[in-house]
Every structure is written in structure tokens, then in C-alpha cells.
Image 1 (cartoon, helix red, strand yellow):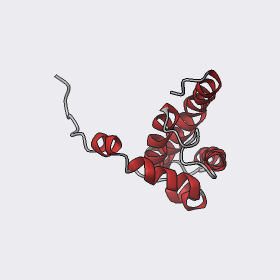
Image 2 (cartoon, helix red, strand yellow):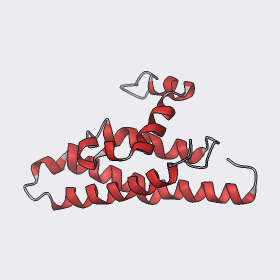
Image 3 (cartoon, rainbow, N blue to C red):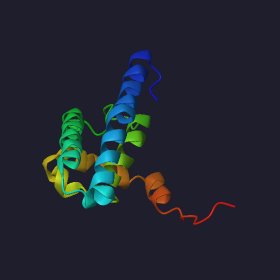
Length: 133
């Protein structure tokens, strides 16, 4: 989290972008693409979330143009909040082709940088617990 007030509040705005946009829209797209939506003949609900996910990816892509991370050169909580959702959108939810992820080169570049961070590598490989005692 940036120490200066302006940087701190701008970072919080990007965390809110994840909470109010990325998380809900990518999650709904994932649901309609991978789970229940496959059973619906009417693809309008899925397509609505595809369109909104593309819009959000475009905002993120524009933000990342000429920047390493969302806030510039500093890796922040905003990156930690957003990039796992991007990873799940194209991985777990299998919606990369639907949203045309290749058309968002700054997002895919930053995602690869994110996935290469040592702490992220460790976190991705934490063994899954089947049952909580």
C-alpha cells in the first residue's frame, strides 16, 4: 500500500474496481460459461457477462499500458486483488477465448509477471485440503 495519501486512495479505488466489477463480472461469466450456462439454450446471460468482462479488461489494459503494475512500478494490493481473477477467468473458468484475452496484451503481460513472482508461485502450489477438520 502506498504511503502517500494520494497513492493510497488511488490504490483503494483499484481494489474497489476489483470488488465492484472484476470479481462479480468474471465470476458470473465463469458460472454461465463453465457451469449452469452450458445448459441454457439462451446465451444472452452469458454474452452479457462476456461483454462486461471485455469492457473491464479493456479498462485494465489501458491502465497497464506503459506500466509494470496497476499503480506503476510498485506492486500493490490492487494487483494482488485483480490478477487472481484474471488467472481464474482464463484458467479455471475457461473463458479466455470468449473474452479474446489475446487482445489485451498489457493484461496478459502483467499476468505473466504476476504469476512469476515467488510468493505467487508458492501460493499457487499450496496443497489443496479436501476437508477442513
